[in-house]
Amino acid sequence: LSRHQTRYTSLLEQEFIKMLEQRLGPLDHTTINKPFGKWNNQDNNYVVYDVKHGDCIIEFNGDYWHANPAIYQADDLIRGTKAAQIWTKDRIKLSLVEQAGFRTKVVWEKDYLTDKVKTVEEVIEWMLNT
Image (cartoon, rainbow, N blue to C red):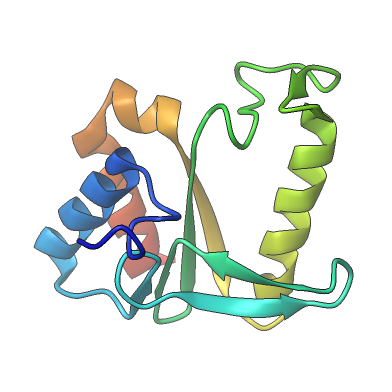
């Protein structure tokens, strides 16, 4: 992968996507090869989603960058921003596509690292059965 293709993806996210694609085949859109996004009028910017396949949007959230609530408190500062503000921005990002009829799922880095196979299996089950 080129540097540009991986700019928005961690190595863990790339591994996660690869595991999904090994089971499901090529996904419609990923930040690795074909980004999918929506315009956010509230912030006046274009937001890119990690994985879009059919009517499913999956966000692979890094514990630090997205202030995993299992680790951080609302007032904790991440790069000068309160965790609660990061959570609000992430909720808005998901609501944009939910309002357009997509189903959303967030995968946390911590959960993936705890049990990669179980996490991927849960995501696949959610994609196929919900």
